[in-house]
Length: 459
Image (cartoon, rainbow, N blue to C red; front, side):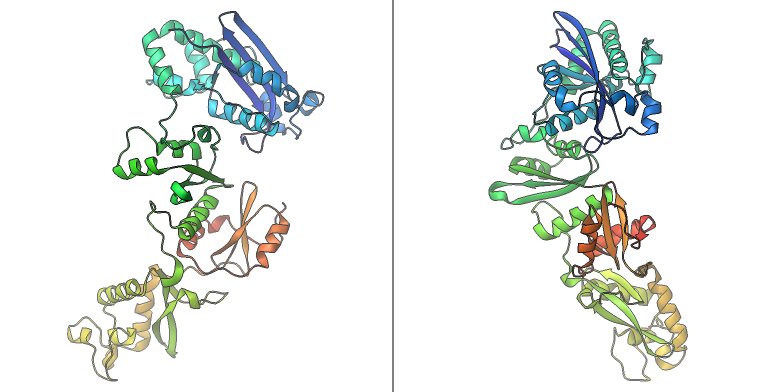
C-alpha cells in the first residue's frame, strides 16, 4: 500500500494542558517520494519552564530565551505539515498543542492524525504497555536524544519503518484506515465543527432545528464523548434519533469534573432538553425538619426547600423530590422502626387514644403512655439518621479550586465559579441561590477539597 506524504511530529512543552501550557520545542520528520527531511526548532514559550520540565527534557529557560516565539515559526510549521498524515505518539497531545498554538497565532490547522500508541495497541494487542520507552525496548529502536523533540520524532519514524517491514501490508493498511477514519456525522452538522471540539473536561450541548435544546452532557474527554454519540453502530433508537436531529454543538470547558457536574445540572434544569432525563427543578423539593414540641419530644414537620433561610436549620432530613415522596419515606420508616403514626403526624387521633399502628402492634405505644416520648424521639432520630442533611462544616463560605477556576460554596449552595479575586467578591455580594438537591450531592462528595474562604485564594 502507498501512503500519503507523512509528518512524524514530537513536541516538548511547559506542561500537559494544551490550553494553558506552551510549546518549547518542535521536531518534524517529513517523508514523501523525494525522501526524508528532518527539522526542529526551540520555541520561546513566553512563560517560565519549571525545574521538573527542565530536568525531564534538558530544555532550560536560558536555552529558549533567544528562540523564536511560535507565531514567528507558525508559517513554516504549517507548510511542513499541510497535506501530510500527522503521525505522533499519543497524538492527541501533540495535535492539541499545535492546534491551540496555531489558533493563537491566527492560523487554521487541520490534519488527518495517526496515533502510534493506538497503532501499537491494534497491531500488538498481546503487549500491555505501549508507551515510547516500551516500544524502544520491544522493537530495538535506537535512541539518540530521548525527551527532545527531534530525538523522539526519530523513534516514531523508526517504529513506523519496523511496522511496515514486519506487518502484512493489507493488515497495516486496514488498521491505518480504521484509526484515521473520519467519524460518521449527522447529515445536518458541519464537519468543520468537529475539528473545533475541545479534548478536555466540560459540558456539551446539542441543538436542533430552530436552536431547540436537544441534549446536555458532560465528559472528561469532550471530543471523544461527543463523537461516541455519532458512532455508526448506535446502541439504541434514541441515540440514532438524537444524532439525526443535531444541527449545532456548543462546548463549555470547565476547570475539572466538579465544575462540569454543576454546570450540567444547572443547564438541564434551565434548558429542559428534550433528550435528557429531566432533573426536577426545586419547586417541589422538601425536607423533614425535626422540631422540639416540648422537652424531649421531637416531631417531624414538612419544610419546603423554598422556606429554607440563608443558613440551613439543624435537624433537616432529605431532601425529597416531592411531598408525596417525603410522606412515603416517613411511613416506611415508621413501619420498619415501630414508630407512632400519631406523633409523626401521619394519623390524627385524640390525645390518649392509640394510633392504628399500635392496634396492629406496629407502634410501641408512646401514644398511650407505654413508651417515654424521649425514647420514641431517640428512635425517630436514629431511623432518620441516614437521611440527615449534612451540616455545613464551615463558619461561612468556602472555595474549591479546579485548574484556573474557583467554585464558591456556602450552605451547600453553589454561588458560582470565578477566575480571580474580583469575581469572587462579586459572587459574595450576589443573592443566595435556592437550595438545589443535585448541587448538594455533587458538593457533599467534594467537601474534603473545600477550604474556608478567608483568606481569598490568589487569582
